[in-house]
Amino acid sequence: MRNNKLLIGIIAALTIVIVGLVGFILLGGKDDSDNKSVGEDKTTSEASADDNTGEADKKDTDSTSEAGSSEADSTENVNQADNNTSKDKGDCYVTVTSNNNWESNGKISGQLDISITNNSTSQIKNWTIEIPVADGLKVDSFWNSNCVVEGGVLKITPVEYNGTVEKSSTLKDVGVIVTVANKNEFDALMNESKLLVDGKEYVASASSQDDNSTDNKENSGNNTDATDNGSDKEDTTTEAVAAQTPAKPESGTPFENHGKLSVKGTDIVDKDGTMYQLKGVSTHGIAWFPDYVNKDCFQTFRDDWGANLIRLAMYTHENGGYCTDGDKEYLKGLIDNGVNYATELGMYVIVDWHILHDLNPQVNKEEAKKFFQEMSAKYKGYDNVIYEICNEPNGGTSWADVKSYAEEIIPIIRENAPDAIIIVGTPNWSQDVDIAAQDPITGYDNIMYAAHFYAATHTDSIRNKVQTALDSGLPVFISEFSICDASGNGAIDYGQADKWFDLINTNNLSYAGWNISNKNETSSLIKPDCTKTSWWEEGELSETGVWLRKTILGIQ
Image (cartoon, helix red, strand yellow):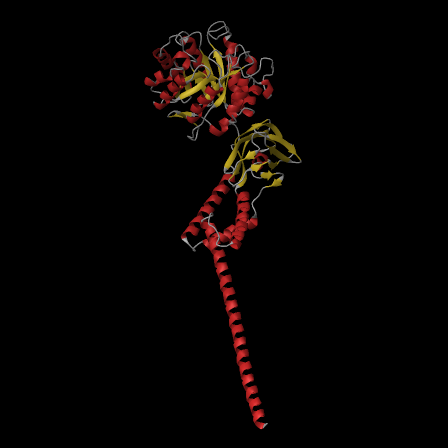
C-alpha cells in the first residue's frame, strides 16, 4: 500500500512537471507569436508609411507614377484630385486691361480689354465676369459678349460662340467701352474683376495654396528632381500673378500720350521713340460732304471706333475742286475747322491735297505751293498735323515727275514745320512704292510714301510692291484704302482685306480708311438712308463701316 502511495506521488509529481513544461511551452509560444505579430504589424505600417511618402515624392516628380498597393492608389487619387481642384482654381483667372482712355465731356471714357485664362485640365463653361462699378457708369459699346449693369456690378457674359474656354487656352477679344466719372473709377475697374462659373465664384483655395507651399518646402533638399519641380511651380505661380496684373492704362488723348511723331526707319515713332500706329478714317471730298467735318463726328471716331487719325480730303481738280470752280476760302475754312476739331480732341490730322483727275501733280503745282505755304504757316505750332502733298498721281505720271514736284513742295512746308511728317504720293494711283524706293527723296527727315489699295482689286501684286519698298527701307503710309473694288463700289472681299491687314499689322503700317460719307457706294462708312453725322449705331453703318470699326478696335 505504501509502495502504491509512493508510486502515485511520483506520478503526480511527474504530471505536475509535465503540465508545467507544457504550460511554459504553450505560454512562451504565444508570447513569441504575439511579439512576432506586433513586429510584423509595425514593419508593415512603417513600410506603408514609407510607401506613402514615396508616392508623395513621386507625385512631385512624376505625376504618372503608379502606387504599390490599392490603398496607396486610393490615397494618391484623392490627393491628386485635391491638387487638381487647387490647380484649376489657381490657374483660371480674368485679366482686365486698358490701353486707351480719354476725357469726354468732363468724364473719362475708355476701352476695357478682357481675357479669361484657363490653364487647368478641364473646360470652363457658362462663365460670367463681374466687375464692381460706381454709380453712373455707362456702357457705350461691347463686343464678343453681353454686358449689363445690375446692382452696382458690371456683368459680362458670353455670346453663343465663346461660352466655353478650352483647357490650356485663353479666351481673348472680349471688350467693353465705358464712361465713368473720373480716372480713379476707371482704374478701379481693372482691379476687382471676378470670374464665376455656373454662377459660383471661381477663386483659389487658400488652404490648397498653403499645402502646396508646404509640399515644396518638404521636397526642397530631398532630391534634385523634387527641388527642380518646386522651382517650376514657383515660376508658374509668378507668371500667373504677373498675367493678372493689368498694365497701366493710358490716360488722356492720343496726342497727349504720344506727342509729336517722327519717322525712324520704316516706322512712325512717338515722342518717346516708341513705335506707334496711326489708325483712322478719311473724309470723302469735303466740298461734297462738308457736314461730316464736325467735332462730334471726329469724337465718334475717337471714342466709339478707337481711331486716332482723321484725313481731310480736299479735291483739287474735280467739280467744286480747289483749283477749278471751288470756293477756296470756304474749302480752307473746312480744313481749318477740321484741323482744330482734331486738335481739340487730341487726334492726329492729315491735310490732303487730293489730286486725282488732274493726273500729274505738276498741273496745279503753283496752287499747291501757295496752299502749303499758307497751311504750314497757320499750323506751324500744331505738332499733330501731317501733310499729304499729292494723293494719287496717275495717267502715266512718272516717279520722276512726282519726285521733282515733291522737291519743290517739301522745302516750303519745312520753312514753317521743320519736323512735320510729309506723305508723298506715288505713281499709278499710289501703288508704285517699289519704284519710289529705287530713287527716294533725300535731304529731309520724316518723309513717307503713300500706298493705296482697294482689296477686291489690288491683291498680291500690290502687296508685293509694298513689301519690296519696306524691305528696301522706304517708310510706307496706307493713307487711303477700302475693302471693295477700285471704283469705291462693288463687292467686298474680306479674304483679301484680311491679307492686307496681316501685312499692315506685321509691319506697323499706319492707315486711313475711305470714306466718311453716306454716299450710295460700298466704300462709304455710313448707310445711304442715314442722315446722322455722328454717334451712329451699328445698324446705321454700312458693311464697310462695321468692318472698319471692328478692325480699328481690334475685334475682327
